[in-house]
Length: 192
Image (cartoon, rainbow, N blue to C red; front, side, top):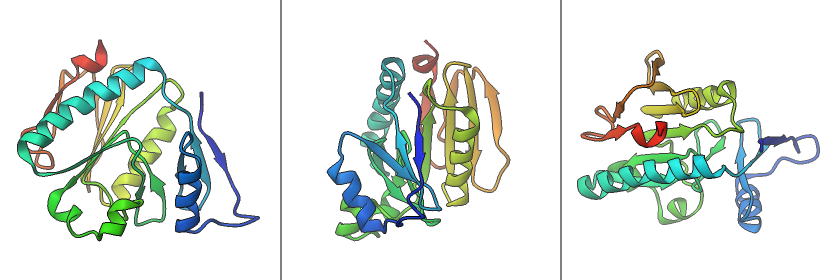
């Protein structure tokens, strides 16, 4: 299970509406698009990664319902980033005030906004180099906080806007810091 990049640019380059329609007409396929317009066909996750994703998402949902500070999104949500890429982080969160600035149509399609927070949980088909490049792209597009979690190697990278990447081996928890105030992810659900 691996991701494939397809370059249609020599034949035609899909505009935003065409890419949106491609995704809508192929709901069983997860697509992303890089800044140069190449389409990336993402493979589904396996059972262990899917289980960890939903367990992590559960903690985010509970926190977000209690704080009511923003909007939470799963990996099926595609965001139109300022650099032109269309990306679907495993988990994304946007501060309520920023979300409210979008029009109803922008909210309904691929929201043209960078999340405030993203999380990428590596599956067996992911490579560290590609996932790190994706995290760097998020930061270049003004994501304020990002977590890259490699459960197989019990490894985490924390990305903060305008700062160096912090690398941790087997941390017990991760803090949402000032981006996700009061949120703490217990990584036991990832490492077990």
